[in-house]
Figure (cartoon, rainbow, N blue to C red):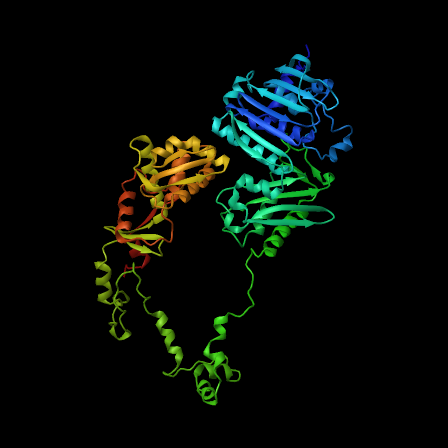
Length: 623
């Protein structure tokens, strides 16, 4: 019987390896940018066309390569970083395995130009499907230019799995920003389809953070810096008011390599636990430096997941460093031991305590209670006791604007000596019976009487369901009316957010937003949906973006569904908002006109019904 195990051809093996390393255009961007950093470049340029599907090109002014090295770099596991097994545990460069360029060449058409300072001519290499088509001398500046064209042209099935241009461009921007943050002393630029999206000059880490996230963060960053013999940490965290409802502006770097670590993220969240709401996420850009021998970065193809030899030490160190930074900059709450100046002006402190006042004080029941020997619990049962005012606590609560206008409760002498069911005064029954409209409970729920009993409506969940179905109809049938702003506002967004808005622009216009692009990352807001309060345009759009990113992980929903859910959640009336009787009645009427009134879009219940029969059982009225 013939043998059945064979060695894979190199081109197939490279394509299989590429599936681990090059999953989308952003994967190639990461690898090429890191190679440029390792080459000692001080200026790095990234050029993108068609969200990387047509072209990903990186140009640097680094050390360049000889003609032999230029050819060898495309071979599998060809690297200048490792010569022995011990080198694997002392890695300080970004790349080291020699997989990236071989994988890129296996799934695209590659052109490379490179020249060293010592060479008069550079080298040009053209590769197609892992095969070198051409290699020749050429004129080239010092450094390297590598262009990856027509990604997955030879693997059409893989190309079909790529997302929309906007989605792929967001991934590219994410990878670009991570590398740019890790090396603020280098100059970076990003051009997409002939337009410059980013240009970062060399500078400090804080300058790089502000240039990426926006100038308004300049005064909202807190410095983190701690050093020990085992490890160092430095970077910045945002003040509590910068916390958002979604993850995003959170960056961890270990030895300048971006990593994802839920364990270390938990340490940061614990450090902020007492300063931000539990459902919020703080901003942080933190760098951990430690001996590479304590880190294993060779546990994942993309090297974004790593292992530490002792995670507990890192956890405690990160948490302590952030808490110390927040306390040092007076961000965390602190006890104020200075006496309020207003207290100093009270009569008890400014007026003399005369003998007459002493006698008056000594005659009170409170004085006797605390001065009688072994009688700290003494209670004066006389009618003159001040403790009789505690009885007032058992009376009805004071009337509020939205409460029943109930008369005072009956006195005990009014109770007839009959069954327990008759202890309530008839005046109370009549007042409750006359209250036909809905009532707000704790500014969170709506109580409404129905024929068979009553219902308790969650005002926020109900309004979210109403808006959700209204927005769905707007996209399918008739667009929502737009309320034009008297003074249009300019909205400047982060580049990644601007990409999202560009992608959603037609749907946003159908939902009542009048937005117009105005520059690279800027929009002019000329109008908003009619139910958005005037002057709240910018907050409405920013909140919508946060909600949209919150829903982005739910792959079961398409983009339109995520947008509609985001708008409904963002614009729903919050718990704690007082409502008029008419507003409450409108919510109830519109809720039961919905196709699915019993749950919110997220699956939360919108109301609970109570039947009279169930109430009678609860009060055991079967006597």
